[in-house]
Amino acid sequence: MELIRRLRARAAAGKPIAVGIVGCGQMGSGLAHAVSCVEGMQVAAIADIDSGRALDTFSALGVGRDAIAVAATAAQAEDALRAARRVVTADALLMPEIPSLEVNVEVTGVPDVGAQVAYRSIMAKKPVIMLNVETDITVGPYLSDLARRTGALYTVASGDEPGVLKMLWEQALLMGFEVIALGKGKNNPVDRGATAESCYDEATAKGMNPKMLAAFQDGTKTMVELAAVSNATGLLPDVPGMHGPKVELEDLVRVFVPAADGGIFSTPGVVDFSTGAIAPGVFAIVRSDEPRIRKEMKFITRAEGPYYLHHRPYHLCDLETPQSIAEAVLLGEVTVASETLHSEVICVAKRDLRAGARLEGIGGHDWYGILVTHADAVARRALPIGIGAGARLLRDVRKGQWITIDDATPDPSTFVYRLRMLQESLLGGAGPVRR
Image (cartoon, rainbow, N blue to C red):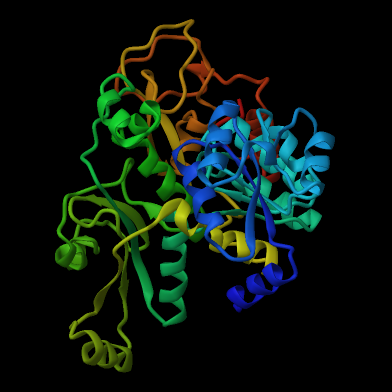
């Protein structure tokens, strides 16, 4: 790919890739530090609703306050960048409009903000890299199609599980294997009742947003990550919410296979997860019945087959995202993108809910997400989590029940809802949101 050579050439020419970061929480600030260590890239602008966090991040990177401009308009931001100053703004929607920014990385985790930033970046022909997977699993096919039709670039980032699992999937297919399962390690058991309050102390100790940690603990984030994998590869959850057994690394190749061969799956070609020691790794279970390939695998790995484990013992989240930035800007390459929805993450009541209430968002008190096939979501008219926040309940829903669009009306004023409706038209009208 020659990325390093190309980046060094940019550095030598005094034209590093000007990167914009939207969202400066744990992941966004970590990405800023990673980019600052890459020759040929520079964090040029940061948008965050709390401008102080962006200023603190630049300060931690060694940028003096006099070298930073706080901008309220795209023109102010552009003037600052042309004067070799860095930019901070509280308005995420300025970022696609700043001409000197070459690429935006969306890291807010808020579906509606992510949809707006991605759409505007695409329309401005500016590559957009999504660490906001919640947006991608909701309206990713529409945004991908729009980018292809307009000559722009839209992609989910490398480093998060979807990016590294897509890599394992492609490598396996290019070696002639059948992919039986793609999976990730989850570093804690699922606690469906987790809230910001229940995990506040742990979140504070880790420097995390408590609601985001709650979304990890209640399982929603795992469902989101594997939904993106499913939509990019066509592999499906075997059961609603997946199996999620606790399995040691050496036993994955025995458990994560079809039941006909002693495993847990009803069919090959699935996404799933395991708790325990495998976290923070990702894995692929692959199969080959080709005699020469099996002979080679036995010689190289000592594995008998026909099932084999391809394992990556880590995913490094935002630290790996600069690779997607470089590939997008220098090569025009996409890391992960979906043409359709194979799976959906849908809302399940976390507690008894009463008619008239407005639903909270991810990591809140009202719902957690589970991964189901898109066909199942359509058949049962399930409410996707990406448009769950702000939905108004039309009737009571009991704890543990799937929330449907007959139970709750999504907020039609949100941009992500409008894109979702356009996407369902693009996909032939098939979707749970259509009434």
